Length: 136
Image 1 (cartoon, helix red, strand yellow):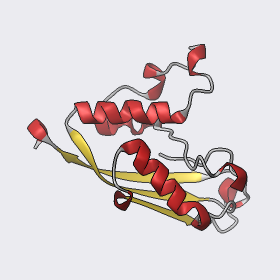
Image 2 (cartoon, rainbow, N blue to C red):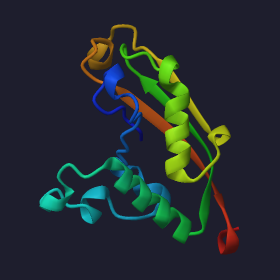
Image 3 (tube, helix red, strand yellow):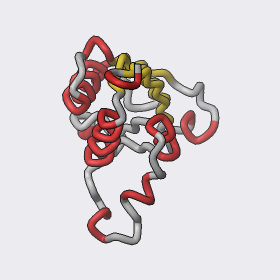
């Protein structure tokens, strides 16, 4: 999953925060806390790009490649449209794929729940992987 860091226009140049959560199942590895324990002080404030790079390395070692990624960012503010291309470029750079392989869409939550009240951002991502090498 990808989350917007420090939700404000001033910080949108980062454009992402990777939170794999339990979604590491796609590469059959233990959860994030196993690899980056919260009790380890070196993980406090660690750049989220580190988690993403770790997951990508594992994915590649298992013989998979990213085909495409579809991200949906749900928030009232900031508006995603003005920074959509920056987010796509940053994600493509981090993942070593073409910008054409990444879709980023923004929408609101129609003033419903924490996201709709502007207290949270919901991000969803679907990643299509292609088996390569021996996994084909």
